Length: 332
Image (tube, rainbow, N blue to C red; front, side, top):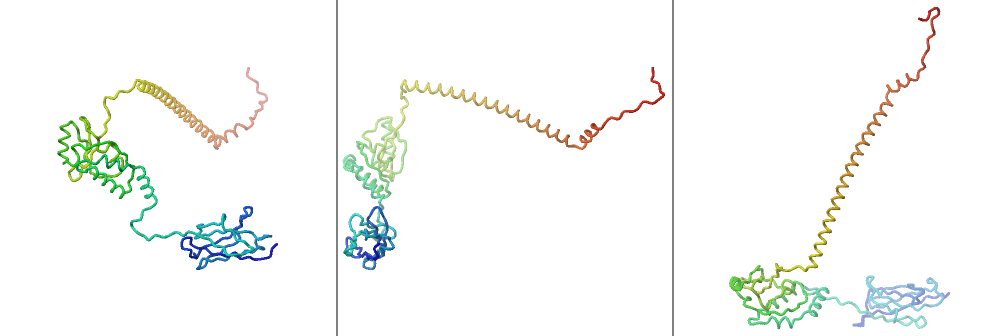
């Protein structure tokens, strides 16, 4: 066995600045996958240098192994040279390990987290801003103002959903007094279902439900969004059709299921009745058992009583026979 101690020396430097990095833990490991053994460790000094002692006798090595190195900071692995840098015991030359240290940013209120970045990237990739601006640019640039407010509020609150444009055009509603709009729509047989505050955001409420539809038709209902008494936005309220015909096959399925439901209800009633009868029978049997148990207790009390013991004792006494008197004739 080799009776020698080798020193694996080297330096850990920053890949960008080429300066030594202090306070890191460097471990030497056997590159032989059959062993997979840690050979030693050391901390880097102020200049990033380290020196690891390899005691072959203590490690029970016949020959000098070829180690590779792992670099840690607070138990976090920063670099491993398993596939690149190996130390040669014959030359014992210094090993240089390059790492990339994380740069700390100064604290500030304007930083955004990774989740917000991913949301913003997804929003940008999936949204059709050109279509939004083209389809909603009209005389007073009302829709541009709506989209601008939507984007401003959405990014402020990170309430982001991809924008999908539906063809639409302004009519004589937006930028008008709420009462004037009510009167104009009423004259066209269009009802105002609700007036809500104007609170734009990239969500279903402001975009997905037909933002600024092409036309409004008699009989429809609309929802108005007002700001300071002025309509800034509107949407059509979808209502269920009262004259919708149910297909014949659907009607047949409904009738079939209703029949099955009635059968199930009858079966359930029968089962409940049977259960009630069984409960009555069980209750009656329980009462009979209780009576028998009481009678048995009474009998046991009698058997254990003093009077019963005396009665048994008297019953078991022998009966004495009396002798006949001499000289007395039996009556004829």
